Length: 383
Image (tube, rainbow, N blue to C red):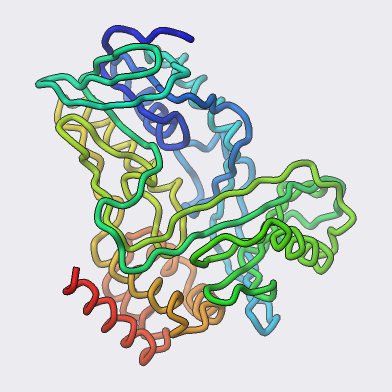
């Protein structure tokens, strides 16, 4: 095991997506800092796939595996809707990790990768002391992205859980990407959808995703995926690899500052959008601000991931879906297909105007959403 350096400027506790986003931003900011990345798990291969909305280009464009200008949404009635024009991008983790390490090397950022667990993080004046398996490390600033429950428990907590298959050998129209197909098997409560993202004419990611309070049995994912593949005409393709994941969807609150000089990034800092699970674009935005603040010599507290009002919308939507007040499949289908893509993108991105938000909310089932709002407000008062 590599012993940690005695002291560094920045310690990143957890070496996954959030840490790599900050490294990418630091390398681009040209700051002369020493950085230690501490994680017992080595993040180099394809351990995950990120998809996100943007406006046609990304700070990590060299790592974008595929971008789709149009998407299909298949409602619960089987009717397909076209969502265009959009810009929906895919980044595979191996490409992203490679890009970040190359950028750090080219930019001269002093990074040390330490395969070690961190057991304690203790502020000590102008420094922070980290107790690790390999000894003690001190840092001026610490950014912790390890998964953790919310600091303020939420009234509604769902899991976004999924299983995906990377398929090779299928004959595909690589422009025919399906974002959400709601005709797949549904859970007893919550909702489920499938999607198909072809990266070229012979290779695609197909996935079965569920929003519910608990995970399914392993065979339930496989049965749903096999049925989806057969219906999409890719049932005979070879399964190259599979990926599983769980993303928390909660209206609980996450602190961005954990202690003096200690901050949280990624899902641990609230970067996951509660009602959708999207995280990657927000991690990039936060990392850019943090890097700029470090370069300017000011406190590098991460910016708020989403406006407060958007988090309130999400809390109400989560409650409506979880309590069965709305048909989640119909609600998401209508949200995505009844408005111009730019309006929906702004809403998902947390950059929409109040006027656009009013138009979007007016298209939801008003009585059901009012009941969800009343329940959320009552729960907020009790907490």
